[in-house]
Image (cartoon, rainbow over the protein chains, first blue to last red):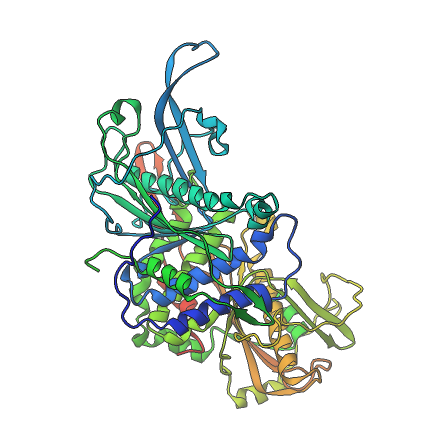
Amino acid sequence: AKTPKPAAGATPSLDVGELRSLACDALLQESFYQNKKRPLLYRDQDHTPGPFLTQLVSTLAAFLSCRNPLLAASSLDLNPEVNYYWHHGEEVVDRGYRKGRVDPVRFQIDDNPHLQIRVPKQLPEVVPLEANLGDVPVIDHKPSKLPLFKRQYENKVFIGSKVADPCCYGHTQFHLIPDKLKRERFIKAHLEDQIEVVYRANGIASLFAWTAAQAMYQGFWSEADVTRPFVSQAVVTDGKYFAFFCYQLNTLALTVETIENNPRKNICWGTESKPLYDVVEDGSVKGFNDEVLLQLVRFLLNRPKEL
Amino acid sequence: GVRQAQWLTKTKLGEGLPPSVRSIIENPAHQLEDHEEEVKRAVSHARLWDTTEVIPKREHYCPVLFEDLIHICRLMSAKYPSLAKRMLARNYRIAATWERESILLQVRGLNGILMNSMAPIPPVASKEEVLATEEHVLETFYPISPTIDLQEVIVYKELNDTGFKDGYPYSHPHTLFFLESANIRPHRFRPEQLRAKMLMFAFGNALAKARMLYGNDPKVLEQPVVVQSIGTDGQLFQFMVFQLNTTDLVSNDGIKNLVWIDSDQNLYEGALCVPIVKKGVVLKPAGIHGFQPDTFKKFLALYLHGTV
């Protein structure tokens, strides 16, 4: 489903000017004021958008921590690892001594978000657990045809830190689009309609892996399905264009045995990518878009009802 | 070590931390004790929980610990709104040049993580103390030349650059952070050398800023420039506050600069991922041992210095 998520909670007296100046300061520092050498080959992301995103999120999170007590108890990870391993569907082994036998198809996601906020309490659910908002398309190819599931190395499940950490629920992840998938390349290859697909795919895959790993840390698995929904958010960006996603995990039962009588579906909401600013010229930011900043602020202020 | 750096930067050493920082630590209104739990959680996260392997390596846990401690300090801006006027700068380059007794010295390049603020730190030493440094005699190491172990380079440009363009709103360098995160011990700086490195780079930053504010002529500064410095290898912390009083560095007489160093502060004694078990008896359980809250109080006091 692709409808934009409604705003989470009213923000009575938020100083938009202050937020805008914080965001512009971070952007100007990284792109203009700091004397940097030229970016290395195919490493444009590490030169400006990466540091800008780190600065923006850390200053905004600190600024908003007085409004959102969940942020005050949060843990900020830089470049964490997120892994999840699961079975879904069946296939017949086609060569080797086990030829002809039926095996579950194994999937493994290894993800490195740029930034991640983990919190000690779960975000509230968006829709009830049993809500049914549509059907899932069925794909008949083998998963190794997709670049994400080509090889499967180690079976790991990890949310960013081990089980003993009290901040075991996820709040928001921030992803940077790598250099090979830049907008300019798509436009040059006349593939403009594929730009949004990149953002959506990144959002869905990363958020599923994160929420499912969080559920597994709490003791749920495909035979013991989740009793409460797990909600997390993500922001996918290339430094200028931002796309926002929210994911609700309703079920972990995806293996062949458990999926037969399982009516629940996992749901992801997302927006299209919108630019935060037009251009940075001579020490000032032109065409700053407050809407995108406010959406980011609303994401950061999301918290359980009782706080 | 530090004595060589002192001669090269014409600095007098004061023991412990300066009185203004100590007053922040001792002031009960700042409630530095509340954050003990959060700091313990940050240390456990960095040393025990942050990786898919059993034991994280120093290259991994040193930056993670630093980021967590800075995150805790930044969350204080809820209580002190002027703390929001700070910005971290990673991978920035500094350039500063000065002459000491006909030897041309330079400090250049990537050094550490710098925290900039909009407002400068007020001078830590009173005017009388600054004037009193005039009588202090710098320690020399005859027959060893003071430039021993320094890299001799032919440089064509005598450059003075703070690393940022003009008009940058966060123009005052506040604190420099050094992370010794190499895995192998010989690749890391020993504490004494780390302190010397901290002194040289704090001096370089202060000098570049002073040259930008007051011009290139050597003179005694009306408003001394203060730059702080914190260095760590993930467990041991070194704290330093440097005050630049003069840019007249050619001669050995006259007013000197001041530095206060608090060295070798342990944040915790040890961290074990797996408990030590001998003959079926648990000698040391897994977790953090010997946590010392005072070290974080000093870290936080240096962070808050200048705004409270």
